[in-house]
Image (cartoon, rainbow, N blue to C red; front, side, top):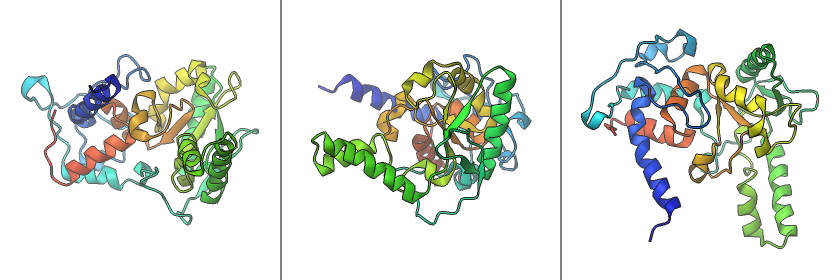
Length: 284
């Protein structure tokens, strides 16, 4: 008998097809992390892909489909344009980057930050977001940003040794460590687009951050500054990373809006976009 976990995962994968309509015709907001009512996005012409979310028209353009499921109007060219956006780079254990991956950085971390920089555009976006949060009386700080691949290796090796000291074999320790700290070249921090955030009310990077005003503010507002919650709880089986409410990824405002309305994690979104770019018709 299949477990409820496998049934739920299978159902979620099927919903990825339905969620295609959300990329251009609007749809459900990210469950448990977004506003209860989020305006729907219209079809995006190719030339508008680089515009900020605030510049997008508000009237949705929808394509009717059988059984009430909207068919995606995203063209192959539009899907490819999103895939080619360097801010949408997928970095994980199956898509590592090399040690010489070029990153221009800018400092934006707090005084106590471990790694104080992000890729320049991401840093500017974070500073704007931080200022907006401050106006709302919320203190959002970056605790860790860009990490070199060599530094990532040090973190991964340390976590592996931690589990080795607990009696695990080398292979088991590395597998366990990889669920917490990505191997070198496999972390988004290595491309400068990922930020570990905290606040004075909760300075540690753990799930307790989800109970803070800072996290709630981010869930409501981070999208317009181009950041998404990268490792949500419901996507652990896809991302291979345990729930990290502190880990936010910069993809740009328009891409953040599309991802959040689709309800897909980055891995699933990339997979669907690749199918569309290849000329497949993907419907719910």
